[in-house]
Image (cartoon, rainbow over all chains, first blue to last red; front, side):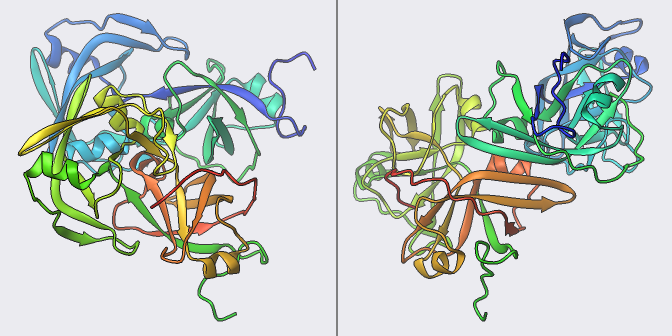
Length: 217
Length: 217
């Protein structure tokens, strides 16, 4: 088989995919960008991310919750239709915010937060989530792996003899997606991953059912 | 079978055991206690822990590393023969210390740290570890579960639909031990556990081999 992705469903061989550990970050609307950084301000690209058109911006903000604040939180661009704040459970405890784990974009009924920038601050009525771990992939890769959008799979990591299996990892299929597992910092730290490491094995594939959740990157 | 522990090895039924999420803490020698809190000082019991004779003390210390400091770190008593500082990976990153994951008491070649108290500070040449996840149990419970000291097992948690399996969980058998899984805060947060929750299932039992590591509580 010439494809670098070795199928997990049809074969006994698991597929190796790269891991991105997502630290806390915010997605902002253009209106919020201007309230925080000044009228007419546009986000500047600092580092391109693997998913197409996504980038870590030069801009950072301070997050303020009932129990504390977190400075230097990265803005991820481009701007979106809704403000969204993605926090690990550790971050939530530091801020005093209890947010549900959701797919990106699924913000109904989530808690709010205060975001502060150099030109002003914004109080969000909702938009804070922990992001459910997920794997981005293209339709071509999904086909080879025998997977469909919204499938849930098991992903096994084996780092320094501390093996860990994440179940209920959501498969996200879109023509623009590159194959990549997204974990939050709690999950990355529990697995013992360092930021410079990026390999893992996709283990047992166990389709459960479609979640039907709205989701974007 | 009248035993409340349902065997996992002989049966298909997994055993349910309680979870303790251990936040960062220190074990101290009596000499270090006196350097930090004053001559003749004795640790005071704040809260008894499930493992016999172990307690969270009234006393807290500040940990100081190259990149930062962590205040209000709990001392766990009683005093021991060696100072030992137990940190999650998140804590290590905050302090700028890169410590290995070890069984408790296995401190050779580990990094040092500065510990500060109200009466003085102590610089440890070594003693900082991440603690490998482990399960305490008595010989009677181990016998029912078909396990031996140093076995490694898989433990599955299912919290709010985010299933997680920790492998390579070390079994620690001693007549004084009560059945309890010990995770660090990164592991607890990755599983979505809250401090007040304590139930999980002991899943597939896969004995690998004896580690031969020195270990205490």
